Image 1 (tube, rainbow, N blue to C red):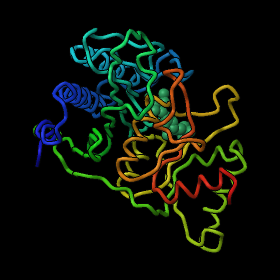
Image 2: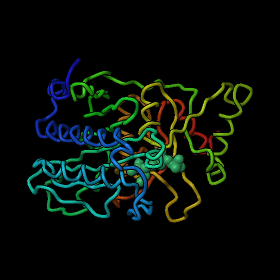
Image 3: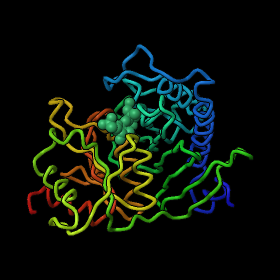
Length: 324
Ligand code: AHG
Ligand code: MN
Ligand code: MN
Ligand code: MN
């Protein structure tokens, strides 16, 4: 089975980016090791702190964030990093050509129940003009050079794109290396599976309620087929399932928080997952526009997310846009 670096060279990925991806896989192995040690490493449970998102940080949110920062910032190709857990960006090397945005630990509520979590990352080009600070990162997802995630599940998987399809690597624990296990993920256009946090039903827009109502109505309803539902509560794991066998994943507009009506973050969750989904033949949308086209105004900006099997996402968008 093919190793990571030879696969990247075969895909003609530039050497600087190969170095960044190599550093990311080192971080992934380090976090994977700590996670698998679990309670033995004393890493479960919460801290007393809140992050910039207003969430109570888990010990592993903090640990994974620190590991990523420490290891990535040693790489001279990296100009700066931005994290879900950090208020501002962290500067690296002034001559670096790359920026890395990351969600160090996705699915934090799963940590203490030994369920699936992930790490998500997005690599952008460092602008060549005189921009500084957070402005460096305010680029649309179409600028991404590499995007991916690590899924810490029964096996640890590294899934990413450099714009050449979606590659899947599985960590061989015996040799400590990621090996290529799927060359090119393709999301089927049709699906009978959806993922949404149903407990928020009363907070959704009426059009989203109507769409979900019709899925639940099954083969005697307007959609004339039965749908199954899955919700792992970790976007990495839910999107991984969509990439592997199709489905629709959404975290839609939600009227609970008037100032922050969306949950997922554009830079750390929306953009990287949107590019992966598009690379696998799917659609990734906010309900109003293609996610990758958004011009960000804030590194912690939140967006609505509807992604997955092309025909199903397009059907959902028809409901939202009132033509159903
Ligand atoms: P994070 O753990 O990085 O803050 O992200 C959690 C996100 C995402 O992974 C998941 O899809 C969603 O929150 C789960 O939300 P619910 O708590 O509503 O299930
Ligand atoms: Mn969080
Ligand atoms: Mn997350
Ligand atoms: Mn997180």
